[in-house]
Amino acid sequence: MPDIGGDPLFVLEFGDILHYYTPYTITLFLLALIFTGLAIASRPERQIDIAFGGDAYYAKETTISEMRFRRFMAIACGLATMGAMGSGDIFNFTLFVSLVGIANIGIVAAVKSRHVLNAAYEYGIVAMVATLPLFGGAALVAATTGTLAISVLAGGGFAVPLVAKAFLALGVIGEGMAPFYAAKAEMFRAPGAPYVIMCSLSSLLIFLRVVEIVITI
Amino acid sequence: MLIITRISRVLSNFKNLAALFAGACIIVSLVGILSLPLAFEENQLYPKTQLDPSSALYPYDRGGVPFGTTEVICQYPENSPYAGYVTTYLTPLSLYLAENTLYIGTTIVAHPGGIIDEILYNTRGADTVVETSILFTAFAIASYLYRREEE
Image 1 (cartoon, rainbow over the protein chains, first blue to last red):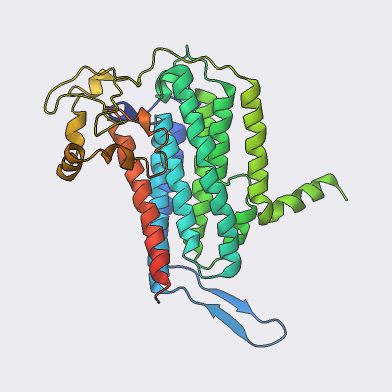
Image 2: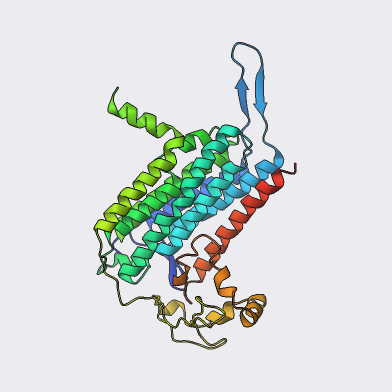
């Protein structure tokens, strides 16, 4: 398997769908695993706004139900990221990426704050629309090569069109927003630190993974 | 004003996000249209054959004998020695619906990824697991947001 990640350390088989872990992807996998553990174990941060020019301050409380829901979404996002890191099948990878996008929306949608929800709305539109280039890219790969397994495509002999790779990358960018942090910067103003950082980390990891896939196939 | 300042000012406003992404999609789509025609690989691993409009599972009826082995092309045949059990994947309720109505085949499309779900094939069970996870996550978000109104 001549890919940039190195030789697979071990392979997990689900029928035609292989999950394989190279030194590159296992590093990303462990990063997602550790951060998911941190999101489970840690308590949400408490933001304090200080009213300038006076002694007053506002403490923003995160309610228990909101905290529980966002923790659940952060765990779902972490599991989806871990799945996307190891997936050795293009369509399976796109499914995990769209799960990451939906879980990201869920993390910020629970916040009761106008400016956060405004940013989350814009991000949600992009994440929903991004499924079109994402699955379109996977469909183009399936149609032009006849197979979806990354290890088989990496073996050579297949002409994966450039536009399919571009669609895949564009879809992942839209789901995770890794290069465009404009909306995410707004969303990070939401109280509850470990959960919102999960959005950022997952989008970074799926972007690193799609770069590897696009170079490999 | 430096051009980088202007670019970063446009990028920093999240209201431009959807427009930016739409522009990127348009550019890539134009490149894709210009690169047409793309050759279709005849030797598909997951072919679309045996479509039977009268079947209750249409267009997801992949055939196969329940509790029997059907000849299936696999990427990794050694991983699926018992390939061909596709119609036995149905739960008893789905089997009842498939036998008595004509609509079980169309309900599978009601989730993300359903459009190219037709490539779903006997040996691709992990896809189905992830698809339903997407569906349940979306339901969890929707139900939380709906019930939050009652607080």
